[in-house]
Length: 226
Image 1 (cartoon, rainbow, N blue to C red):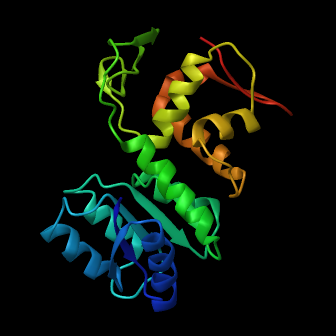
Image 2 (image 1 turned 90 degrees about the vertical axis):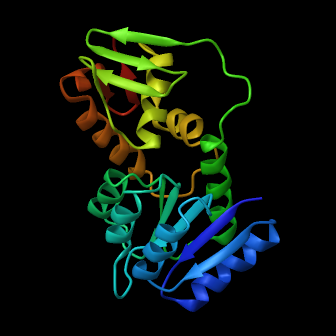
């Protein structure tokens, strides 16, 4: 089904992921460190549908490897790390990763996350008519997945786009944290619930002066007021 590059300096972790991935019909190639992953992706930029990248590795860490790979490949990246600090998650999402999983992890959950990421990344066959909305200088093109601020394109992670689109389509409605996680992540969410807050922070940063549209509802969640 999917072609996956697994990058981790722990052979046992690579073997575990390979076992579950191949069981679901995916093909797997392995890399023992970030440097090897960069070389593979540079030589074969279109050979993979998904990259699973560990953070702490010899030769070249996962963050640096993703930064380099992003220069010539937009392949979705799921990052693995024994570190669950908010700073590390924010750094990863700013680099353009699609998900962040903290070790130890459930292999079944990992497969669910892979399927969810690939489902979002897969283009639809029948494209709907162009659908877009504007709020002052903020323009959101749902069909093209393009966001502009005062005419300039906003470069955000796929998850930030998903959040903004869901907010915009449900504007002026109080949305609970559970509602946002369920509808934006699209699967049973087992991770740290602060992941939502991390993405909200990143989205507000991307929206600049129009971050004012995202209002925090204490004890409830958020509302997009526009």
